Image (cartoon, rainbow, N blue to C red; front, side):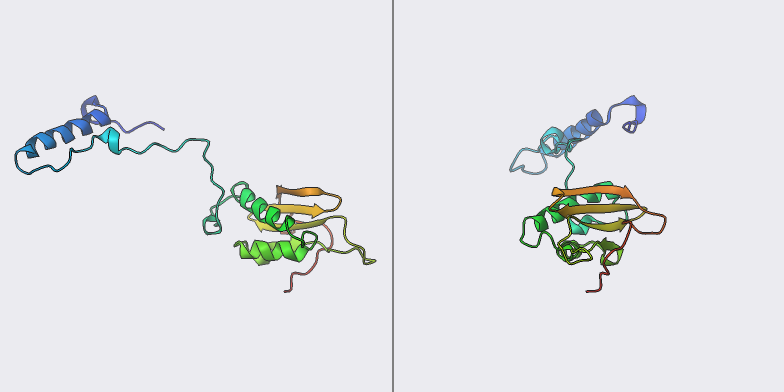
Length: 168
């Protein structure tokens, strides 16, 4: 992005400095100055660096936030649940994501148990985010939690197969 041009080709910083200097000289005899007037370089704040990308908070998640921007926050919530004794319970992830501000009606979760009552080897859960999905997977066969942004399915869903009703 280029800076706006100033009249007569004069750089903006020097024009501002000239105005400040003229004002200071003109007012010097009129009013007492308890402290020196700061120069523009003293009052300017440092611009943010390109490497600063803060993780969004629930208040910052919105329709305008894309899935890649929401993923670090999603991952933080998943990691926090993984650190508890409820790490193999799908409901714990859904409840934590809802508490963090994600839309419960946009979520899916797989079953915690197999059809014969054994603990599931892994659990998947998702949040539909526009045309994409925030997807998490945890479980004994997974190791550490895995999170990713995946394309949404044409069915408006995120997960393939049978999922558990989120009716609580």
